[in-house]
Length: 422
Image 1 (cartoon, rainbow, N blue to C red):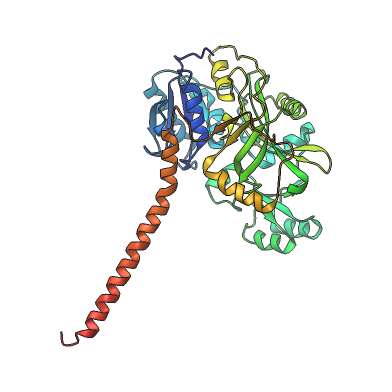
Image 2: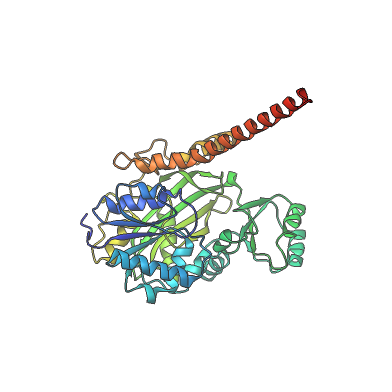
């Protein structure tokens, strides 16, 4: 595959989440083709910063809640330091939205898909995505967007439980989220108790619960060019996630699913999106429909799971397309497995206890892609392990010091009691 080695790539991330295997995967993917790779990192000791394929890092701690103007100015300074146009690879919604909404300012220093200005923000919003699904006839779970506590009270009287609550806007998780991730609510009493904490204007959505016993989790990753035509499109099934059934992918397989691929491609064409996408779908066996749960308008952390026979993944497809190169055609590597080492072990234990299985998962993998460990780039794996262990070591050290101080204080008290004359 002949990538343009004169055009570097830049991993753009806003917020404090140093253990992000997606960024490491992108650095490796393009770096192995000889493309110079740069990354924004929280500090010098992130897994991404330790990759042998990283040409340079820009230590820039952010929260994702900074003013857009400050973030744009920071990106422009990084562009000046790189010294030549670079392909932007956002790893979160904040970055994807910022790039789209400030494309005119960033275009001189960077390369990125010419997506419609307002579309990434709308797709990242649970309400915006639901409205687009309804508009274009794409199946989605039944959803309520309550505007007040009183509306929730009325809904609770007729709602079918259990149901799930999610933050309405993707960006809320960086500010003061009403709920922590996807929250399952068992009954009306539980809903009303939670709703009292959401204030007069609840920033949540209440969504139909699709029981795991009657559902399967599917993934679509793709890259669409400026005409919304798929240059790389992959489908897979999620076997395990962490937290169980509601978190990030821990274990998954590439599985051919022409029906789902066609549904996703048609939706993208209808809304006119271009760029990399990461879609979460849930197949509801009760009505035989795939329902769209999440639309991430950027690369997903597990994108390296998906690769074609020609060696193309979505990151490589974007770089090739934006630099005027042809994206080689090729079938996806069906049966290929993806494992996130640090979260799949606890996920495996949880899924075994629940007895949940995925019918469409292959009995045997045709190959395995690990999120962290790679023979040609092992340092990110050890850095990840060190960052996982460090909080535990710090806690044990603090506990030991605390107990030692307590013992010393107790000994001193006892000594005073034994020597009253002094």
